[in-house]
Length: 243
Image (cartoon, rainbow, N blue to C red):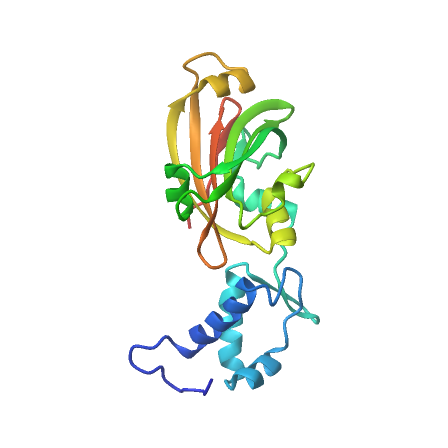
């Protein structure tokens, strides 16, 4: 890649092209969570660009929480540990405004051909196979959330064989399947408790719930999970900061 002082008409800026190349390595598994990247000098020499161009690409990836800079040690691929994944993607807060820590219990798991709505939300081909997971999440020991999760089997081929699933699935996805969730698109609406929610959350018919409909996206921007969470918000709320 030859250095250009100005991007050519119709082309992305050079640092964006460098970022695209580095992203391809993350997506392809060339670098995995926790790996140390080559130095800016090494990357610049390899790609035939200036260190400043490399630095600008790395800065954007660090700002997007894809990379982590550690003083005196270098730049690493971000590891989304359980704490990070939980508080980045789980937005329920208590009455005091502080994040709450849920626990999870799997109710059932199944494997089958994707239904039309599942294929549409996950951008699947035909009747591609999916895993379905239903679980209850408790807060302070009280059942508060009923979740239904749909995953493409091709991305998580041996998931059905795993005896225990962790509380935070996104950590499992990153470390065992090289699928790093970087973004989620959510839709929120008010609903009434379904029969399943009534039974597993101990609710009366007609109890109002908050439905969080989420599609999680991986590094390459493709959907990797569709999750619907039915949340009983008697003791909690959905909290988000807007900047």
